[in-house]
Image 1 (cartoon, one colour):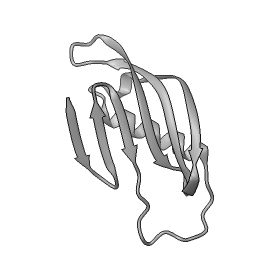
Image 2 (tube, helix red, strand yellow; image 1 turned 60 degrees about the vertical axis):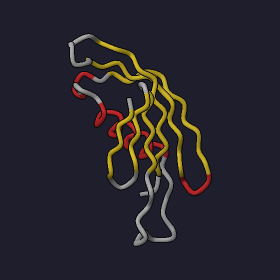
Image 3 (cartoon, rainbow, N blue to C red; image 1 turned 30 degrees about the horizontal axis):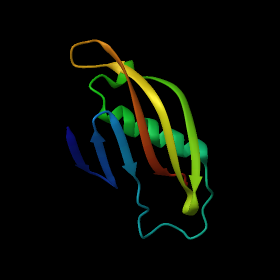
Length: 100
């Protein structure tokens, strides 16, 4: 199943793996602080946006890898209800910006 959404970046859902690429706008300041906490919050928001029942989301362990240019890759697992009401655990991988 492929699902493409146009937002600030592109969100792709491929068989249970979500990837989000946040592209900074051209008007951002050159010197900004870099926050892994902000990146994790953005990743969770993007994963929730893909779920049928986002209020049921329970995030498990995750790994955070920082790349150049304040980009972070967050790999983890989320458990949430599907359209039938069953709780399903799904792995996700999200790349987001940690710039303020």
